[in-house]
Length: 514
Image: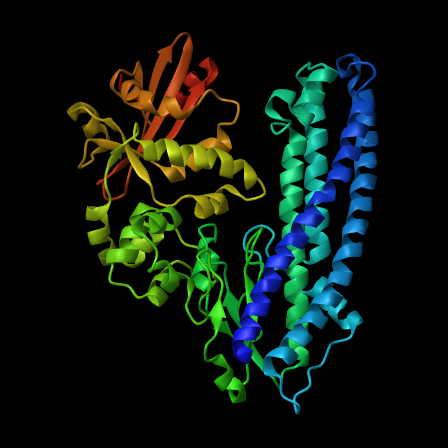
């Protein structure tokens, strides 16, 4: 085994062990969750809040918030007590890693002092893109605890103003036994804790590794991004895999919440001979260490490629005439943020010509719709820490299904060149995120054609959006469809149940046609 092979393999193996450590740290949050649960049940075990005055209610909320602040503060101290020693270990490991890889008597690596490593961990901003981008480690964790406190106290305040009993408020916070307590606010807190802890551990390991490299700048001149070769890797990490950066001129893991990517030292040119024979791990076993994610993906089946990329980008990937490197470059903007398919289409329209012909048009009754919808129902709650736009970029892969056929009269309302209406997985992500608690199910989308063709009211909201309203069993249902700028496609952008007051607002807002 060559020295460079040893460096890559040991770094990859260490990344796997780090994932195990993340899981252990996440599991330790369980005791904190029990303390929160116990305190809330005790606080709400007496007189129903419905009998409280507003002043007394706010006093009760302040007491709850104070207790939660203490519980979360103790958890932070405990977590920090694990993360900082981890930083020391990671710096020492990376120095040993370099020693073992180079294995030359005249080369000696330097381990930076623990105080220096810990300072770097706390003073280096996270590379995470999005609302948490640029935060330091301590604010990143503590801001999350503030959000969770507000979520819990907000549920109590909302219950009070809606006249809920203490038992109903506790159930909203804890969840129901029927659903394994996965439908309560504390389940969201648990998921978010997992995301914050995993991201924090990754940041600590990354910052410590970089501090060691910079202490050995005569040996290490940069770093190579290394992503996990499987189907769960994010668009950002897929596109960055294999990229080499100089220090201070590129992103570093974690680039997003729950990032699993790592980095490998790029050695000085005098060690170039060590690159021969390098290997790296994949879901199918060891592969050439110099291969990038998209080069690896080209050797996988079309079915697996579509699972990773979605059908449209899958066709572009196979038939767009792009190299793996160019495809990777098109997926990110200059700030290493993932771009949408629409943005990519505007950037390189010619590569989609073949792809659009190759994507099979399927109806909303197809098994692929059911599979993707059920997958998104699971994935969307798991990413409750992300904003809606970031969530859509992460989960939507360009799937679309035919959901309705318009009459000539209705087609004219859009001024469209087609009478077909589609629903995309991007809309499904938004629907699942925003329609929680509404009776919008997998089967609801099969009713869209009927709502549009037999609507009781049609309201033109603007030059692109039309609202179709239908009353069924005393309830109003609304479908909003939108035409694209070039008038070539029409998409459902919203499917929801509306109250009578909402119905009147919608009718007043637009131009009623029926």
